[in-house]
Amino acid sequence: MSTRIGLLAILMAVPGALWAQPRTVSLPWWDNPLASGLTLTDSQRTRIQEVVREYRDRLANLRAEVDQAEADLEAVFNDEVVDQRRGTATIDRLARTRADLTRAVSEMTLKLRAVLTPQQWQELQRRGEEGARGGRGSDSNKRRRPQIDATPRATSNKN
Image (cartoon, rainbow, N blue to C red; front, side, top):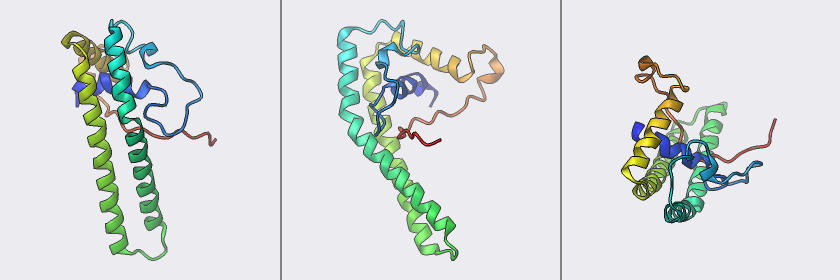
């Protein structure tokens, strides 16, 4: 899991690539501080953009399916009379959609990892670990690194 933190952080910075709705601030992923200093070649940038483009719609659709399954499960929980059969079916569908989304994100991450050199990958891992520790160098924080939610989510303008 920790070997994907850096690359996943870059993925989360790709404006519009993983979200179904446009974001208000759009910066190219390569302007993200996590990615700066990796000395990506033009060829690497092009290939990364191609991979993200290849997965964009699939990830957005899968995220929407997960959101719908979560909403459906919430509705089951909020029913006055609990329908065990309907609840179990809804839980199964949610588990399948989450698994499909995780698989797609992992496949894309693997393709993106293949674009990077071993040195670039190691640098992303180092930066991701620092970010997970909040920039602190304490060894005690290495054991309790928070999990990063790599699933794309649609943004909302609700306040």
